[in-house]
Amino acid sequence: MNNWTGSVLPSAVCRLLFVLLLLTAHCSLLTGGARAQQVVDKMVATVNAGVLQECREVCLITYSDLLWQLALQPNTPLDNPKSEDLNRALSLIIDQRLILQEAEKLPTLAPTDKEISDERDELVKEFPSQAEFQQRLLKVGLTSDKLAEILDQRERIEKYLDFRFRNFVVITQKEIADYYKDVYVPRLRSRAPGRIVPTLEEAHGDIEKILTEAKIESDTDAFLDSTRERAEIVMLNPV
Image 1 (spheres, rainbow, N blue to C red):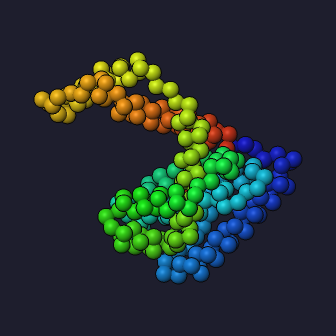
Image 2 (cartoon, rainbow, N blue to C red):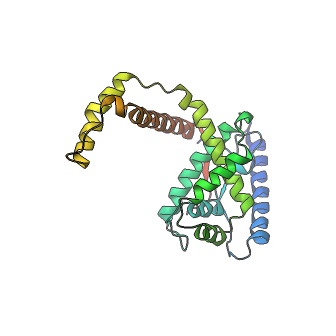
Image 3 (cartoon, rainbow, N blue to C red):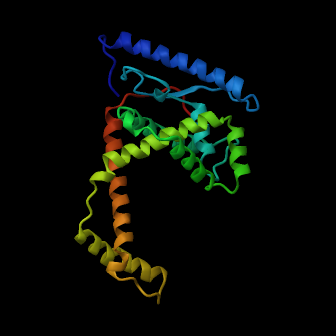
């Protein structure tokens, strides 16, 4: 975390006050829009709140943000959530905010309404039923507008990662052949003895996808590690 110096303190304080105003508005929305859920919201962390020139809600992480993240994860308990689950959600949201702050520098990555709608449809499929999905949203006070905002952010993140990493991934034929020989064939024979093993040509496409996703994940992890080191992440309340 960067130390606050005298030269940046006034602007940093102003941004912190802005964050406090955001929280006040955030709590008002919870009170007016989700009375069925008794939640006393609190600030949990800030991400680059003292660094970004225009710090909006993307800098602030509240307890509600953690609950909303848990609600969108199938089979994750929502009643009296465990500290372990909350901290896992917090770590994920911090990563999301760090990427989102970079993605917002590229306005061309803004998703369309259809992309957001499709993202919602795919998300619902991860739950046993539409009714259960809606019940989880209601339990944590996640409105349809807020859900759309979250999905918008997820689409921006996905587009940014594609733009930054996927477009530049190169998988060589040697990598595919080595994976086929060292991983693909032994794994298939272990899981399904006696099954006819696809040829390298037949498995080429699947292996290329596997290696591509692995490289993107590795590059993303390295990017996040570097970004976290430079970021000003302030933990305000333990969860």
